[in-house]
Figure 1 (cartoon, helix red, strand yellow):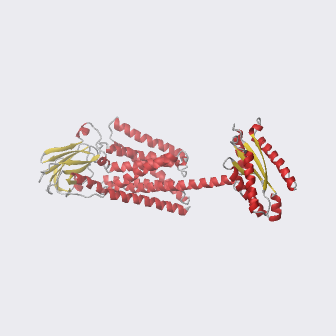
Figure 2 (figure 1 turned 180 degrees about the horizontal axis):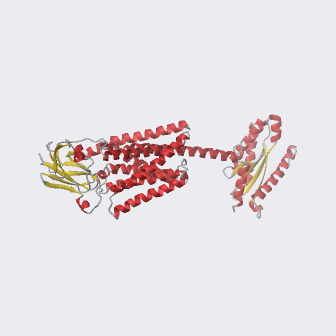
Figure 3 (figure 1 turned 90 degrees about the vertical axis):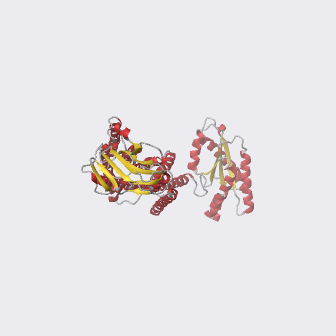
Length: 563
Protein backbone atom coordinates (compact mmCIF):
# COMPACT_ATOMS: atom_id res chain seq x y z
CA UNK A 1 0.00 0.00 0.00
CA UNK A 2 2.78 2.43 0.97
CA UNK A 3 4.74 1.76 -2.24
CA UNK A 4 1.62 2.32 -4.33
CA UNK A 5 0.90 5.54 -2.41
CA UNK A 6 4.41 6.91 -2.96
CA UNK A 7 4.42 5.97 -6.65
CA UNK A 8 1.05 7.65 -7.26
CA UNK A 9 2.11 10.79 -5.36
CA UNK A 10 5.28 10.89 -7.46
CA UNK A 11 3.21 10.44 -10.62
CA UNK A 12 0.92 13.29 -9.54
CA UNK A 13 3.91 15.55 -8.92
CA UNK A 14 5.50 14.69 -12.27
CA UNK A 15 2.18 15.38 -14.03
CA UNK A 16 1.97 18.84 -12.44
CA UNK A 17 5.61 19.64 -13.34
CA UNK A 18 5.14 18.55 -16.96
CA UNK A 19 2.02 20.67 -17.33
CA UNK A 20 3.80 23.65 -15.80
CA UNK A 21 6.81 23.32 -18.10
CA UNK A 22 4.53 23.07 -21.14
CA UNK A 23 2.60 26.18 -20.09
CA UNK A 24 5.83 28.02 -19.25
CA UNK A 25 7.16 27.30 -22.73
CA UNK A 26 3.87 28.47 -24.23
CA UNK A 27 3.95 31.75 -22.27
CA UNK A 28 7.61 32.50 -22.98
CA UNK A 29 7.33 35.65 -25.10
CA UNK A 30 9.84 37.98 -26.71
CA UNK A 31 9.72 41.77 -27.15
CA UNK A 32 10.31 43.56 -30.44
CA UNK A 33 10.79 47.12 -29.15
CA UNK A 34 12.43 48.72 -26.11
CA UNK A 35 10.36 49.56 -23.05
CA UNK A 36 11.08 51.53 -19.90
CA UNK A 37 9.82 51.54 -16.31
CA UNK A 38 8.88 54.85 -14.69
CA UNK A 39 9.63 54.38 -11.01
CA UNK A 40 11.65 57.43 -9.96
CA UNK A 41 11.60 61.24 -10.30
CA UNK A 42 7.85 61.64 -9.96
CA UNK A 43 6.45 64.95 -8.79
CA UNK A 44 3.63 64.08 -6.43
CA UNK A 45 0.92 66.34 -5.02
CA UNK A 46 -0.96 65.12 -1.96
CA UNK A 47 -3.59 67.61 -0.88
CA UNK A 48 -1.89 71.01 -0.93
CA UNK A 49 1.63 69.65 -0.59
CA UNK A 50 3.96 68.88 -3.48
CA UNK A 51 6.88 66.48 -3.27
CA UNK A 52 9.58 66.29 -6.00
CA UNK A 53 11.75 63.31 -7.00
CA UNK A 54 9.52 60.69 -5.40
CA UNK A 55 9.66 56.96 -6.10
CA UNK A 56 6.39 55.09 -6.69
CA UNK A 57 7.15 52.79 -3.78
CA UNK A 58 7.40 55.84 -1.47
CA UNK A 59 4.13 57.58 -2.35
CA UNK A 60 2.16 55.80 0.38
CA UNK A 61 4.54 57.28 2.98
CA UNK A 62 3.60 60.83 2.00
CA UNK A 63 0.21 60.64 3.73
CA UNK A 64 0.19 61.99 7.28
CA UNK A 65 -3.08 60.11 7.87
CA UNK A 66 -4.37 57.02 6.02
CA UNK A 67 -6.11 58.08 2.79
CA UNK A 68 -9.89 57.85 2.66
CA UNK A 69 -12.51 57.85 -0.07
CA UNK A 70 -12.31 61.05 -2.15
CA UNK A 71 -8.63 61.81 -1.46
CA UNK A 72 -6.56 62.52 -4.55
CA UNK A 73 -2.99 62.01 -5.67
CA UNK A 74 -1.51 63.84 -8.66
CA UNK A 75 1.64 62.29 -10.14
CA UNK A 76 3.66 64.02 -12.88
CA UNK A 77 6.76 63.03 -14.85
CA UNK A 78 8.82 64.19 -17.80
CA UNK A 79 8.74 61.23 -20.17
CA UNK A 80 12.09 60.28 -21.72
CA UNK A 81 12.29 59.64 -25.46
CA UNK A 82 13.11 55.95 -26.09
CA UNK A 83 12.90 56.01 -29.88
CA UNK A 84 10.34 55.92 -32.61
CA UNK A 85 8.15 52.92 -31.80
CA UNK A 86 4.79 51.94 -33.29
CA UNK A 87 1.71 51.94 -31.08
CA UNK A 88 3.33 53.62 -28.06
CA UNK A 89 1.41 53.09 -24.85
CA UNK A 90 1.60 53.32 -21.07
CA UNK A 91 0.41 50.55 -18.76
CA UNK A 92 -0.48 51.29 -15.13
CA UNK A 93 -2.51 49.33 -12.59
CA UNK A 94 -4.77 51.26 -10.24
CA UNK A 95 -5.94 49.93 -6.88
CA UNK A 96 -9.46 50.96 -5.89
CA UNK A 97 -9.13 54.39 -7.47
CA UNK A 98 -10.24 56.32 -10.53
CA UNK A 99 -7.65 57.58 -13.00
CA UNK A 100 -7.27 60.52 -15.34
CA UNK A 101 -4.25 60.63 -17.61
CA UNK A 102 -2.98 63.88 -19.13
CA UNK A 103 -0.25 64.32 -21.73
CA UNK A 104 1.09 67.88 -21.86
CA UNK A 105 -2.02 69.03 -20.04
CA UNK A 106 -4.44 67.31 -22.45
CA UNK A 107 -6.75 64.59 -21.11
CA UNK A 108 -6.11 61.41 -23.11
CA UNK A 109 -7.66 58.74 -20.86
CA UNK A 110 -9.98 58.39 -17.88
CA UNK A 111 -11.64 55.56 -16.01
CA UNK A 112 -13.96 55.18 -13.04
CA UNK A 113 -15.28 58.70 -12.45
CA UNK A 114 -18.83 57.74 -13.45
CA UNK A 115 -18.72 54.86 -10.95
CA UNK A 116 -17.27 57.10 -8.26
CA UNK A 117 -19.97 59.75 -8.77
CA UNK A 118 -22.69 57.05 -8.47
CA UNK A 119 -21.03 55.42 -5.44
CA UNK A 120 -20.32 52.26 -7.42
CA UNK A 121 -17.48 49.88 -6.64
CA UNK A 122 -14.17 50.59 -8.40
CA UNK A 123 -11.70 47.74 -8.18
CA UNK A 124 -8.19 47.06 -9.39
CA UNK A 125 -7.28 46.86 -13.06
CA UNK A 126 -4.57 47.40 -15.65
CA UNK A 127 -4.94 50.44 -17.90
CA UNK A 128 -3.33 50.40 -21.34
CA UNK A 129 -3.20 54.04 -22.38
CA UNK A 130 -2.33 54.76 -26.00
CA UNK A 131 -0.35 57.97 -26.59
CA UNK A 132 0.46 59.83 -29.84
CA UNK A 133 3.36 58.40 -31.83
CA UNK A 134 5.05 61.83 -31.95
CA UNK A 135 5.15 62.03 -28.17
CA UNK A 136 8.84 62.98 -27.92
CA UNK A 137 9.61 64.52 -24.48
CA UNK A 138 6.11 64.98 -23.14
CA UNK A 139 4.84 65.77 -19.65
CA UNK A 140 2.81 62.88 -18.22
CA UNK A 141 0.29 63.39 -15.39
CA UNK A 142 -1.93 60.98 -13.50
CA UNK A 143 -4.73 62.14 -11.25
CA UNK A 144 -5.98 59.36 -8.97
CA UNK A 145 -9.05 59.58 -6.73
CA UNK A 146 -9.40 57.05 -3.91
CA UNK A 147 -12.65 55.09 -3.99
CA UNK A 148 -11.91 53.00 -0.89
CA UNK A 149 -10.03 53.40 2.35
CA UNK A 150 -6.30 52.65 1.93
CA UNK A 151 -6.59 52.80 -1.85
CA UNK A 152 -3.09 54.32 -2.01
CA UNK A 153 -1.39 51.78 0.24
CA UNK A 154 0.93 50.82 -2.64
CA UNK A 155 1.52 51.70 -6.31
CA UNK A 156 2.41 49.39 -9.15
CA UNK A 157 5.19 50.35 -11.60
CA UNK A 158 4.35 52.40 -14.70
CA UNK A 159 5.68 50.98 -17.98
CA UNK A 160 6.08 52.70 -21.33
CA UNK A 161 6.69 51.02 -24.70
CA UNK A 162 5.02 49.31 -27.65
CA UNK A 163 1.43 48.28 -26.82
CA UNK A 164 1.69 44.59 -27.87
CA UNK A 165 5.08 44.32 -26.17
CA UNK A 166 3.68 45.78 -22.96
CA UNK A 167 0.89 43.21 -23.03
CA UNK A 168 3.34 40.32 -23.44
CA UNK A 169 5.58 41.90 -20.81
CA UNK A 170 2.79 41.97 -18.23
CA UNK A 171 1.90 38.38 -19.08
CA UNK A 172 5.55 37.30 -18.78
CA UNK A 173 5.89 39.04 -15.42
CA UNK A 174 2.85 37.15 -14.16
CA UNK A 175 3.70 33.76 -15.68
CA UNK A 176 3.66 32.04 -12.30
CA UNK A 177 0.17 33.10 -11.30
CA UNK A 178 -1.18 32.56 -14.84
CA UNK A 179 0.28 29.05 -14.92
CA UNK A 180 -1.21 28.21 -11.54
CA UNK A 181 -4.58 29.75 -12.39
CA UNK A 182 -4.86 28.05 -15.79
CA UNK A 183 -3.65 24.74 -14.39
CA UNK A 184 -6.11 24.76 -11.48
CA UNK A 185 -9.00 25.79 -13.70
CA UNK A 186 -8.24 23.12 -16.33
CA UNK A 187 -7.41 20.43 -13.78
CA UNK A 188 -10.54 21.18 -11.77
CA UNK A 189 -12.72 21.07 -14.88
CA UNK A 190 -11.19 17.75 -15.95
CA UNK A 191 -11.57 16.25 -12.46
CA UNK A 192 -15.14 17.52 -12.21
CA UNK A 193 -16.03 15.82 -15.50
CA UNK A 194 -14.54 12.51 -14.37
CA UNK A 195 -16.23 12.73 -10.97
CA UNK A 196 -19.65 13.44 -12.49
CA UNK A 197 -19.23 10.50 -14.87
CA UNK A 198 -18.40 7.98 -12.12
CA UNK A 199 -20.20 9.33 -9.04
CA UNK A 200 -23.31 7.28 -9.90
CA UNK A 201 -21.27 4.07 -9.67
CA UNK A 202 -18.90 5.28 -6.94
CA UNK A 203 -20.87 7.53 -4.53
CA UNK A 204 -17.72 8.16 -2.47
CA UNK A 205 -16.46 10.39 -5.31
CA UNK A 206 -18.98 13.09 -4.40
CA UNK A 207 -16.25 14.73 -2.32
CA UNK A 208 -14.21 14.99 -5.53
CA UNK A 209 -16.99 17.02 -7.14
CA UNK A 210 -16.63 19.76 -4.53
CA UNK A 211 -12.84 19.47 -4.46
CA UNK A 212 -12.73 20.00 -8.23
CA UNK A 213 -15.10 22.98 -7.93
CA UNK A 214 -12.75 24.42 -5.30
CA UNK A 215 -9.80 23.98 -7.71
CA UNK A 216 -11.73 25.81 -10.44
CA UNK A 217 -12.68 28.52 -7.95
CA UNK A 218 -9.06 29.02 -6.81
CA UNK A 219 -7.81 29.20 -10.39
CA UNK A 220 -10.46 31.79 -11.23
CA UNK A 221 -9.65 33.74 -8.04
CA UNK A 222 -5.91 33.88 -8.78
CA UNK A 223 -6.52 35.14 -12.31
CA UNK A 224 -8.83 37.87 -10.98
CA UNK A 225 -6.61 38.72 -8.00
CA UNK A 226 -3.63 39.39 -10.27
CA UNK A 227 -5.86 41.17 -12.84
CA UNK A 228 -4.84 38.68 -15.51
CA UNK A 229 -8.39 37.69 -16.43
CA UNK A 230 -9.12 41.09 -17.99
CA UNK A 231 -6.08 40.67 -20.24
CA UNK A 232 -7.72 37.63 -21.83
CA UNK A 233 -11.41 38.47 -21.35
CA UNK A 234 -12.65 42.04 -21.59
CA UNK A 235 -14.53 42.55 -18.34
CA UNK A 236 -15.15 45.53 -16.08
CA UNK A 237 -16.14 43.49 -13.02
CA UNK A 238 -12.92 41.58 -12.48
CA UNK A 239 -12.52 42.68 -8.85
CA UNK A 240 -16.15 41.82 -8.09
CA UNK A 241 -15.47 38.35 -9.50
CA UNK A 242 -12.35 38.18 -7.32
CA UNK A 243 -14.41 38.82 -4.18
CA UNK A 244 -17.17 36.44 -5.28
CA UNK A 245 -14.70 33.57 -5.76
CA UNK A 246 -12.98 34.54 -2.50
CA UNK A 247 -16.27 34.28 -0.60
CA UNK A 248 -16.84 30.78 -2.03
CA UNK A 249 -13.66 29.43 -0.42
CA UNK A 250 -15.08 28.90 3.05
CA UNK A 251 -18.41 27.20 2.11
CA UNK A 252 -16.62 24.80 -0.24
CA UNK A 253 -14.08 23.94 2.47
CA UNK A 254 -16.90 23.17 4.91
CA UNK A 255 -18.57 20.88 2.38
CA UNK A 256 -15.32 18.97 1.78
CA UNK A 257 -14.73 18.68 5.53
CA UNK A 258 -18.24 17.35 6.01
CA UNK A 259 -17.71 14.51 3.54
CA UNK A 260 -14.36 13.48 5.00
CA UNK A 261 -14.45 10.32 7.05
CA UNK A 262 -12.04 11.86 9.57
CA UNK A 263 -14.50 14.56 10.59
CA UNK A 264 -16.73 13.58 13.51
CA UNK A 265 -18.18 17.02 14.34
CA UNK A 266 -20.88 16.77 11.68
CA UNK A 267 -23.43 19.01 13.42
CA UNK A 268 -20.80 21.66 14.17
CA UNK A 269 -19.62 21.63 10.56
CA UNK A 270 -23.20 21.97 9.30
CA UNK A 271 -23.85 24.94 11.60
CA UNK A 272 -20.64 26.70 10.57
CA UNK A 273 -21.39 25.93 6.92
CA UNK A 274 -24.78 27.64 7.20
CA UNK A 275 -23.06 30.66 8.79
CA UNK A 276 -20.45 30.70 6.01
CA UNK A 277 -23.27 30.85 3.45
CA UNK A 278 -25.20 33.57 5.29
CA UNK A 279 -22.16 35.86 5.58
CA UNK A 280 -21.41 36.25 1.83
CA UNK A 281 -25.13 36.56 1.08
CA UNK A 282 -25.26 39.39 3.62
CA UNK A 283 -22.22 40.98 1.98
CA UNK A 284 -23.86 40.83 -1.44
CA UNK A 285 -27.07 42.38 -0.03
CA UNK A 286 -25.08 45.20 1.56
CA UNK A 287 -23.27 45.77 -1.74
CA UNK A 288 -26.13 45.65 -4.23
CA UNK A 289 -28.88 47.23 -2.10
CA UNK A 290 -27.07 49.57 0.29
CA UNK A 291 -23.94 50.25 -1.85
CA UNK A 292 -21.63 49.17 1.00
CA UNK A 293 -18.67 48.05 -1.04
CA UNK A 294 -17.23 44.55 -0.81
CA UNK A 295 -13.85 45.73 0.43
CA UNK A 296 -15.46 47.41 3.45
CA UNK A 297 -17.10 44.15 4.60
CA UNK A 298 -14.01 42.02 3.99
CA UNK A 299 -13.53 41.66 7.75
CA UNK A 300 -16.57 39.34 7.79
CA UNK A 301 -14.83 37.00 5.38
CA UNK A 302 -11.60 37.19 7.39
CA UNK A 303 -13.44 36.04 10.54
CA UNK A 304 -15.14 33.26 8.59
CA UNK A 305 -11.80 32.17 7.11
CA UNK A 306 -10.07 32.12 10.51
CA UNK A 307 -12.80 29.86 11.93
CA UNK A 308 -12.50 27.32 9.11
CA UNK A 309 -8.71 27.45 9.37
CA UNK A 310 -8.82 26.66 13.10
CA UNK A 311 -11.20 23.76 12.39
CA UNK A 312 -8.94 22.38 9.64
CA UNK A 313 -5.87 22.64 11.88
CA UNK A 314 -7.77 20.85 14.65
CA UNK A 315 -8.74 17.99 12.30
CA UNK A 316 -5.20 17.80 10.89
CA UNK A 317 -3.59 17.65 14.35
CA UNK A 318 -6.17 15.12 15.44
CA UNK A 319 -5.14 12.91 12.54
CA UNK A 320 -1.44 13.23 13.45
CA UNK A 321 -2.01 12.55 17.15
CA UNK A 322 -3.75 9.29 16.24
CA UNK A 323 -0.48 8.34 14.49
CA UNK A 324 -2.34 6.90 11.55
CA UNK A 325 -0.60 5.84 8.38
CA UNK A 326 -1.19 7.76 5.18
CA UNK A 327 -4.44 6.14 4.12
CA UNK A 328 -6.30 7.43 1.09
CA UNK A 329 -8.68 9.57 3.13
CA UNK A 330 -5.78 11.40 4.81
CA UNK A 331 -4.61 12.80 1.46
CA UNK A 332 -7.68 15.02 1.45
CA UNK A 333 -6.78 16.30 4.92
CA UNK A 334 -3.19 17.03 3.92
CA UNK A 335 -4.34 18.97 0.85
CA UNK A 336 -6.87 20.96 2.86
CA UNK A 337 -4.27 21.82 5.50
CA UNK A 338 -1.75 23.01 2.88
CA UNK A 339 -4.37 25.12 1.11
CA UNK A 340 -5.79 26.70 4.26
CA UNK A 341 -2.31 27.38 5.68
CA UNK A 342 -1.24 29.17 2.50
CA UNK A 343 -4.47 31.20 2.66
CA UNK A 344 -3.74 32.08 6.30
CA UNK A 345 -0.21 33.22 5.41
CA UNK A 346 -1.65 35.23 2.51
CA UNK A 347 -4.09 36.93 4.89
CA UNK A 348 -1.30 37.80 7.36
CA UNK A 349 0.90 39.14 4.56
CA UNK A 350 -1.90 41.28 3.16
CA UNK A 351 -2.65 42.68 6.62
CA UNK A 352 1.01 43.50 7.31
CA UNK A 353 1.38 45.29 3.97
CA UNK A 354 -1.77 47.31 4.70
CA UNK A 355 -0.23 48.60 7.94
CA UNK A 356 3.13 49.05 6.11
CA UNK A 357 5.10 46.49 8.08
CA UNK A 358 5.99 44.54 4.92
CA UNK A 359 6.64 45.85 1.38
CA UNK A 360 3.68 46.00 -0.98
CA UNK A 361 5.06 43.23 -3.20
CA UNK A 362 4.37 40.76 -0.37
CA UNK A 363 0.62 41.20 -0.82
CA UNK A 364 0.78 40.48 -4.54
CA UNK A 365 2.84 37.30 -4.23
CA UNK A 366 0.33 34.46 -4.75
CA UNK A 367 1.39 32.24 -1.84
CA UNK A 368 -2.09 30.75 -1.92
CA UNK A 369 -1.26 29.39 -5.37
CA UNK A 370 1.47 27.17 -3.90
CA UNK A 371 -0.96 25.73 -1.39
CA UNK A 372 -3.49 25.24 -4.17
CA UNK A 373 -0.95 23.21 -6.18
CA UNK A 374 -0.39 20.90 -3.20
CA UNK A 375 -4.16 20.64 -2.83
CA UNK A 376 -4.53 19.76 -6.53
CA UNK A 377 -1.78 17.13 -6.27
CA UNK A 378 -3.52 15.60 -3.26
CA UNK A 379 -6.79 15.45 -5.23
CA UNK A 380 -5.09 13.76 -8.18
CA UNK A 381 -3.31 11.28 -5.91
CA UNK A 382 -6.55 10.64 -3.99
CA UNK A 383 -8.47 10.02 -7.22
CA UNK A 384 -5.85 7.65 -8.64
CA UNK A 385 -5.51 5.77 -5.36
CA UNK A 386 -9.24 5.53 -4.88
CA UNK A 387 -9.76 4.22 -8.42
CA UNK A 388 -6.98 1.64 -8.04
CA UNK A 389 -8.26 0.64 -4.60
CA UNK A 390 -11.81 0.32 -5.90
CA UNK A 391 -10.60 -1.69 -8.89
CA UNK A 392 -8.65 -4.03 -6.59
CA UNK A 393 -11.67 -4.43 -4.31
CA UNK A 394 -13.87 -5.14 -7.32
CA UNK A 395 -11.46 -7.80 -8.56
CA UNK A 396 -11.32 -9.31 -5.07
CA UNK A 397 -15.11 -9.25 -4.80
CA UNK A 398 -15.44 -10.88 -8.22
CA UNK A 399 -12.91 -13.51 -7.15
CA UNK A 400 -14.86 -14.25 -3.97
CA UNK A 401 -18.12 -14.42 -5.90
CA UNK A 402 -16.47 -16.75 -8.39
CA UNK A 403 -15.23 -18.98 -5.57
CA UNK A 404 -18.72 -19.05 -4.08
CA UNK A 405 -20.41 -20.01 -7.33
CA UNK A 406 -17.71 -22.01 -9.16
CA UNK A 407 -16.52 -25.59 -8.81
CA UNK A 408 -12.97 -25.73 -7.48
CA UNK A 409 -11.78 -28.52 -9.78
CA UNK A 410 -13.42 -27.81 -13.15
CA UNK A 411 -14.11 -24.07 -12.72
CA UNK A 412 -17.65 -24.80 -13.92
CA UNK A 413 -20.61 -23.23 -12.08
CA UNK A 414 -21.39 -25.20 -8.91
CA UNK A 415 -24.66 -26.28 -7.30
CA UNK A 416 -25.26 -22.84 -5.72
CA UNK A 417 -24.87 -21.23 -9.12
CA UNK A 418 -27.20 -23.78 -10.70
CA UNK A 419 -29.81 -23.20 -7.97
CA UNK A 420 -29.61 -19.46 -8.60
CA UNK A 421 -30.09 -20.01 -12.33
CA UNK A 422 -33.07 -22.28 -11.71
CA UNK A 423 -34.73 -19.53 -9.64
CA UNK A 424 -34.39 -17.32 -12.70
CA UNK A 425 -36.07 -20.05 -14.75
CA UNK A 426 -39.06 -20.00 -12.39
CA UNK A 427 -39.67 -16.35 -13.39
CA UNK A 428 -39.39 -17.16 -17.09
CA UNK A 429 -42.07 -18.21 -19.54
CA UNK A 430 -39.64 -19.96 -21.90
CA UNK A 431 -39.81 -23.70 -22.63
CA UNK A 432 -36.38 -24.51 -21.19
CA UNK A 433 -34.67 -27.86 -20.99
CA UNK A 434 -32.68 -29.34 -18.08
CA UNK A 435 -30.21 -32.20 -18.73
CA UNK A 436 -28.97 -34.33 -15.84
CA UNK A 437 -25.67 -36.11 -16.49
CA UNK A 438 -23.75 -38.61 -14.36
CA UNK A 439 -20.31 -40.12 -14.97
CA UNK A 440 -20.09 -43.88 -15.20
CA UNK A 441 -17.32 -45.77 -13.40
CA UNK A 442 -15.75 -42.84 -11.47
CA UNK A 443 -15.48 -44.85 -8.23
CA UNK A 444 -13.55 -47.77 -9.82
CA UNK A 445 -11.13 -45.30 -11.40
CA UNK A 446 -10.55 -43.64 -8.03
CA UNK A 447 -10.12 -47.01 -6.28
CA UNK A 448 -7.81 -48.64 -8.83
CA UNK A 449 -5.89 -45.69 -10.32
CA UNK A 450 -6.06 -43.11 -7.58
CA UNK A 451 -7.94 -39.88 -7.05
CA UNK A 452 -5.64 -37.80 -9.32
CA UNK A 453 -6.70 -39.97 -12.23
CA UNK A 454 -10.32 -39.68 -11.12
CA UNK A 455 -9.94 -35.88 -11.09
CA UNK A 456 -8.48 -36.07 -14.58
CA UNK A 457 -11.52 -38.08 -15.66
CA UNK A 458 -13.79 -35.33 -14.33
CA UNK A 459 -11.70 -32.58 -15.94
CA UNK A 460 -11.61 -34.32 -19.33
CA UNK A 461 -15.36 -34.76 -19.30
CA UNK A 462 -15.97 -31.14 -18.25
CA UNK A 463 -14.08 -29.99 -21.36
CA UNK A 464 -16.20 -32.25 -23.56
CA UNK A 465 -19.36 -31.04 -21.80
CA UNK A 466 -18.61 -27.36 -22.34
CA UNK A 467 -17.45 -28.04 -25.89
CA UNK A 468 -20.83 -29.59 -26.63
CA UNK A 469 -23.30 -27.46 -24.65
CA UNK A 470 -21.63 -24.17 -23.58
CA UNK A 471 -22.81 -22.27 -26.64
CA UNK A 472 -26.43 -23.24 -25.91
CA UNK A 473 -26.70 -22.93 -22.15
CA UNK A 474 -25.16 -23.25 -18.72
CA UNK A 475 -22.99 -26.27 -17.80
CA UNK A 476 -22.52 -26.97 -14.08
CA UNK A 477 -20.93 -29.57 -11.81
CA UNK A 478 -23.34 -30.09 -8.93
CA UNK A 479 -21.65 -33.05 -7.20
CA UNK A 480 -18.74 -35.48 -7.37
CA UNK A 481 -19.79 -37.17 -10.61
CA UNK A 482 -23.01 -35.21 -11.25
CA UNK A 483 -23.36 -32.56 -13.92
CA UNK A 484 -26.20 -30.35 -15.10
CA UNK A 485 -26.98 -28.45 -18.28
CA UNK A 486 -29.64 -25.73 -18.44
CA UNK A 487 -30.75 -24.62 -21.91
CA UNK A 488 -33.14 -21.68 -21.81
CA UNK A 489 -34.03 -21.69 -25.51
CA UNK A 490 -34.40 -25.37 -26.25
CA UNK A 491 -37.34 -25.42 -28.67
CA UNK A 492 -35.25 -25.40 -31.84
CA UNK A 493 -32.53 -27.76 -30.57
CA UNK A 494 -32.24 -31.53 -30.97
CA UNK A 495 -31.15 -32.55 -27.48
CA UNK A 496 -30.68 -36.21 -28.44
CA UNK A 497 -28.28 -35.15 -31.19
CA UNK A 498 -26.27 -33.02 -28.75
CA UNK A 499 -26.06 -35.89 -26.28
CA UNK A 500 -24.95 -38.15 -29.12
CA UNK A 501 -22.17 -35.70 -30.00
CA UNK A 502 -21.03 -35.67 -26.37
CA UNK A 503 -20.89 -39.47 -26.33
CA UNK A 504 -19.00 -39.53 -29.62
CA UNK A 505 -16.37 -37.21 -28.14
CA UNK A 506 -16.02 -39.58 -25.20
CA UNK A 507 -15.59 -42.53 -27.62
CA UNK A 508 -12.78 -40.67 -29.39
CA UNK A 509 -11.05 -40.05 -26.07
CA UNK A 510 -11.45 -43.73 -25.15
CA UNK A 511 -9.80 -44.72 -28.43
CA UNK A 512 -6.86 -42.39 -27.79
CA UNK A 513 -6.52 -43.16 -24.05
CA UNK A 514 -7.77 -46.74 -23.50
CA UNK A 515 -6.72 -46.95 -19.83
CA UNK A 516 -10.38 -47.09 -18.82
CA UNK A 517 -13.78 -46.60 -20.42
CA UNK A 518 -15.27 -43.13 -20.17
CA UNK A 519 -19.03 -42.89 -20.43
CA UNK A 520 -21.95 -40.96 -19.00
CA UNK A 521 -25.65 -41.42 -18.44
CA UNK A 522 -27.91 -38.52 -19.40
CA UNK A 523 -31.56 -37.69 -19.04
CA UNK A 524 -33.47 -34.54 -19.88
CA UNK A 525 -36.86 -32.92 -19.41
CA UNK A 526 -38.68 -29.84 -20.73
CA UNK A 527 -40.69 -27.25 -18.87
CA UNK A 528 -43.83 -28.07 -20.84
CA UNK A 529 -43.71 -31.56 -19.37
CA UNK A 530 -44.35 -30.06 -15.91
CA UNK A 531 -46.68 -27.16 -16.78
CA UNK A 532 -47.92 -26.49 -13.24
CA UNK A 533 -44.58 -27.04 -11.49
CA UNK A 534 -41.25 -25.27 -11.13
CA UNK A 535 -37.72 -25.89 -12.36
CA UNK A 536 -36.93 -28.20 -9.43
CA UNK A 537 -39.60 -30.65 -10.58
CA UNK A 538 -38.30 -30.42 -14.17
CA UNK A 539 -34.83 -31.26 -12.84
CA UNK A 540 -36.14 -34.21 -10.81
CA UNK A 541 -37.84 -35.57 -13.93
CA UNK A 542 -34.60 -35.24 -15.92
CA UNK A 543 -32.64 -36.84 -13.07
CA UNK A 544 -35.06 -39.78 -12.89
CA UNK A 545 -34.69 -40.36 -16.64
CA UNK A 546 -30.89 -40.14 -16.27
CA UNK A 547 -30.94 -42.89 -13.63
CA UNK A 548 -33.11 -45.05 -15.84
CA UNK A 549 -30.54 -44.69 -18.61
CA UNK A 550 -27.74 -45.32 -16.14
CA UNK A 551 -29.39 -48.53 -14.92
CA UNK A 552 -29.60 -49.88 -18.47
CA UNK A 553 -25.95 -48.95 -19.17
CA UNK A 554 -24.74 -50.58 -15.94
CA UNK A 555 -26.65 -53.76 -16.74
CA UNK A 556 -24.93 -53.92 -20.13
CA UNK A 557 -21.51 -53.31 -18.52
CA UNK A 558 -22.17 -55.67 -15.61
CA UNK A 559 -21.81 -52.92 -12.98
CA UNK A 560 -24.01 -52.54 -9.95
CA UNK A 561 -26.08 -49.43 -10.44
CA UNK A 562 -25.99 -46.73 -7.75
CA UNK A 563 -29.65 -45.73 -7.64
